Image 1 (cartoon, rainbow, N blue to C red):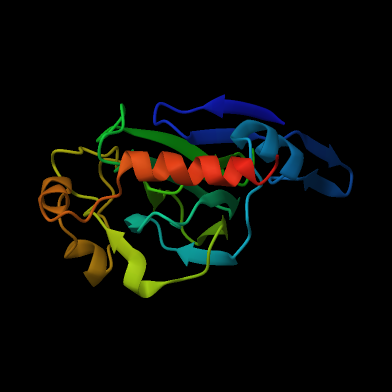
Image 2: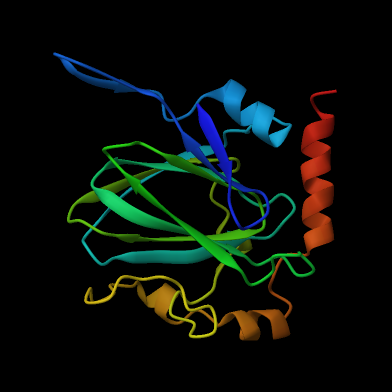
Length: 202
């Protein structure tokens, strides 16, 4: 398993080896040892999610109150998508920055998104599936969003593909509005949470 640190702190791309043969293909998109060695702690598993999206569908930018927050390990078992991670942690050296990774059913790369980071993606093909391993279960009162069309963020959505958004994502605040309202996670609180997770291994 190859691991690449992304431009947003505490986000990583994982590239597993593939084993094709005359029967088809085998790949292990999630490998606990590689993830634990990279993060310094195990990924708790509170819930698994699976979404299927039409081409042009944008989901996000979503995040949760931290602690406990919700870390995500995501990959694309069918189709192709552009996965986007945004640093929403106030005080972070990479606050307001984003990075993007193409995930598809050819390479089966995966992305880890730490608690406190924002996550979004756009489906690049029809009938694209996204699978998520989540560190905590769904908690509607603690989950929030930033509009993925915030012009100041200028996220890398593809040209010529009309965006399809939910009403909730369309009505979400901009990053500046969320910052002003005190909605965003605190970087130091996130760091303390990461440390507590690492301490569980010692």
